[in-house]
Amino acid sequence: MNTITANQLKTKGISAIERNLVDEHELIITVRGKEKFVVMDMQHYNYLRECELETALHESRAEYKSGKFVTESVEKHIKRVTE
Image (cartoon, rainbow, N blue to C red):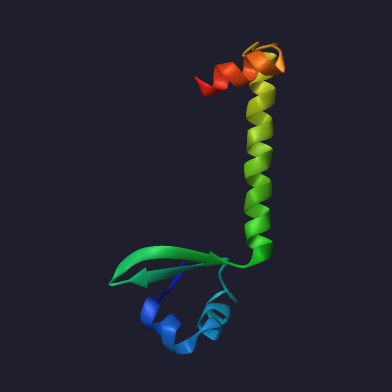
């Protein structure tokens, strides 16, 4: 994965990010030698979000099939989750 320093980002701006995202989907920004941030384009971000939502849906379906769910009123649900 490509990396740039915070100083490179400061001096070269968005062009440093764009240049590094040509070959890779993600770019790490380091601050004082430590990996601090990850930058990606919106298309890749949306892809990852979709994967995350698909995983949540899969987990929910598996819990439903195994009987791990509760049927209750809205009031009881709110009381249960806020306690």
